[in-house]
Amino acid sequence: MVYKFRVILDAEEDIFRDIAILEDDTLEDLHNAIFNAFGFDGSEVASFYTCDDTWNQEDEIPLFDTGDIPGEIRTMNDYPLSSILDKENTKIIYVYDFISMWTFLVELAAIEEESVGAIYPETLFSHGEMPDEAGEKNFEADIHDDIYGEFEDDLDEDDLDMFEGDDSFEDFGFEENWN
Image (cartoon, rainbow, N blue to C red; front, side, top):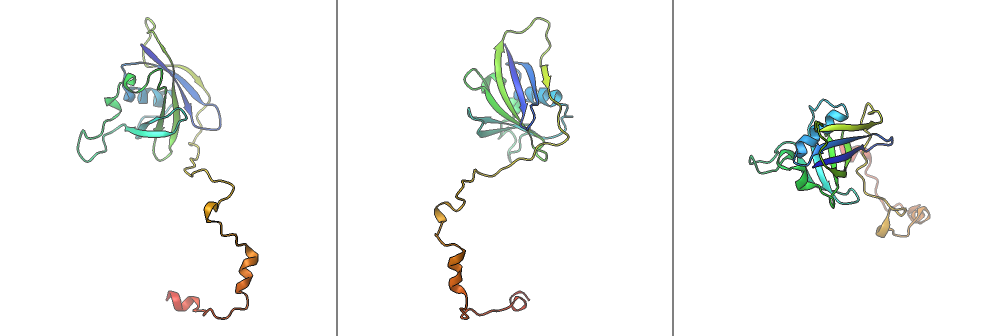
């Protein structure tokens, strides 16, 4: 069978590639197909991340074994596509170049019969031009309108007036404390 993926660059503009690859190919084969389809040279480190239906990142699957003991960590080459992705589990995140953090949302769009004479992997469709630089990633948690949350003490600037005219605080001066 052939897996058909839509690989979307996590950016403001619509930039994506549709890739067909055999279900028995590995995540490393998909990695190669993605960096070729988007015009990277393949010289940077990359990882896939399993995720839930809302793209929340879960487990990392690296390109190389980075464990202390060889063979301790399973790599992309250890995972046939069919072992990770199927009709129920269709999403995976791909990050290329951990300095630039090119991030892609990879979604299994179809599982079809092989086409006679087709060579896989194959880039089926290309939309959008790659920007010169990856978009900036924001790694902050969602902040509510009330940034103080449960720590609000109901004091405001007017409450600080209670210290005016109170000379009981000793001024040690900058030089005394930092020399």
